[in-house]
Length: 296
Image (tube, helix red, strand yellow):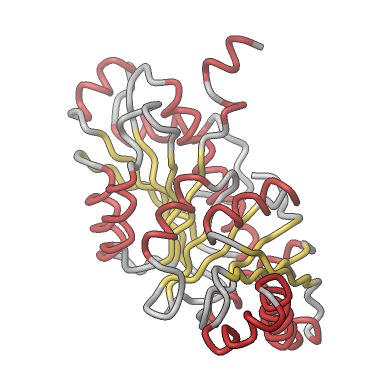
């Protein structure tokens, strides 16, 4: 994971304070710019009475100006603490406009709050599926900074896409662990018997198989503990996060139809419901796909 330079925070209506606190902490530690963006989906009801006399356009501009003023009040304490903060108001569908903002300004991380007073579950799932940068979904009760980080990867023999995405997940988790001086653990899940995988690899133990994967990475933070489980990734991950104190889970989201082991839309929704902690989702960039590499 490259050093964070340009973080986007989605200030959903009544956005939870822990999500903004996490975004601000990451921005300050990384010396990155934090953009706090609100999205105006429709004209507020209390301004509809102005539409007939002055028209829809001016009323939308008035609503956007009011939202921008609220955002400025929200970020003023952060500026006093030395965080480099911009504000922006987007008009339209939240998911579509946030993705466009990420592409336009080349944000390298999107932070969104999760909870009853944060973004809707549907918006969160759409962002996890479509955002062109890592997405951090922050629970209301998250510890800032994170003390324990769990990276979830898969062992799938002969699957290059899974290997590349697993590598990106671990590298991202290690970068965040180093930034926040957190403990890093790795959960490795396989849908096949581990003995079969080890026989094909020629390794002598399950730990050796995972350590072989991690040994090829130049990680900025050490891995404190390895966990090996057989089964599906989502239930294994949720169970591991409940059994041990975990503040942040890092997972991979593969492009559609690219690999069956990572998360689909329904899998992401189930994970959001079951996971007791915050989530950081890393997508497999098209530029890193095996097809792209062979074509280069």
